[in-house]
Amino acid sequence: MGIVNMDALGVLELAQEEAEEHRSRTVRRRALRIFEDRCNPLEKYDDIKFVWRYRLSKESFRWLLDLVKDDLDQPTMRSNALNPLQQLSVALRFYASASFQLDVGDMGGVSQATCCKVIHRVTAAICAKKTHFIHFPDTPEERRTVTQGFHEISRFPGVIGAVDGSHVAIVNPGGRNALRYMNRDGYYSLNSQLVCDHRLLFTNVVARWYGSAHDSRIFEESQLFEKFQRGEYRGILLGDPAYTCRTFMLTPVRIPRTPAERRYNHAKRSTRRVIERALDIWKERFSCVAKGNHLRCTLEHNMAIIVATVCLHNLAKRRNDPLPEPDHDIPHENLPEPNQRPNRVEADLHGNIFRQRFIMEHFNQQDNSSVVFSSTGVTC
Image (cartoon, rainbow, N blue to C red; front, side, top):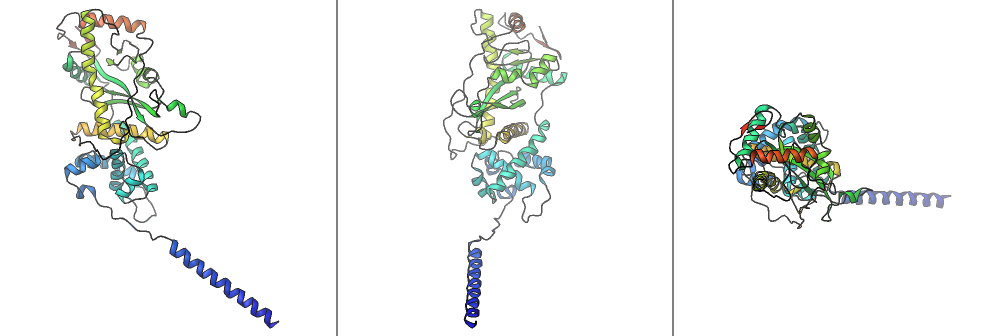
């Protein structure tokens, strides 16, 4: 009996020793939680370095922070939580650098998981305020200002905006519809429709279409198209041959046969360059949407990031923030901008009649400067 008790006692002691050793190994494996020092970028960097890192001036950053801080200041039980200023700086650094979230998080002193949550929270907050940044000219005074601004470029009358599609590369979204996001040049993308005015400000954006969608389809299924058809918006949009010519959308004459048609094509081409310049500046300012980089979030988050960076482009333009030098340290793939096929329908019946009359009225003579702008249209 005594031998049995001694064996049981030995087993108990051995079990206790093993448990103690297990606890010791667990403690050794557990990493200490180290809080990184999180500086205030407004204080750390001078004006030039701040713009290079965050793509906005300090004044614009403060204005944006005041706008979205209530949406970012969320109550939490976690210690050392990010304040709205820190959250905004992490998101802007991601937009500007196109780096992986892990790298952006390391720069901001946060984990990759926290960086991901912060980017989506800031992006949602900016998108919720998009009417503060993106506005289509819909009053007589606004239309007059924009049409006069466009006319000063190359004497093309009545223009309310220039429209184009632009592809933003994404990673393979997976799922049954993944191939719909592959564009004509063989990479996955979102095809975004953007409209800008003469000041290179975007006045409309649609960022929900897959890369294989044609520019004309995106336009014809947009709210902008419906409002022009209903007469809620007045004026002329300038499009390329991917679009169908309509009474509110003028496209180039594919085979010009008269001097008037050639003058029309030349003036239209010169005037429409504003959208190409606006797209170049947008993608140069925010590398995450630039050619050669890929957005790596979910489709919904990628779409929101496109809209958010469009909002920030307008903010920077309105406040005359300088455009920083391109970051040559960021690797880029040589991804071309897919060329859209010319629309098979060059013009609908009313659009063709309208364009011919428009050319005869405004480009039949070499000097077409005698244009009177009205709030409802263009007259000679």
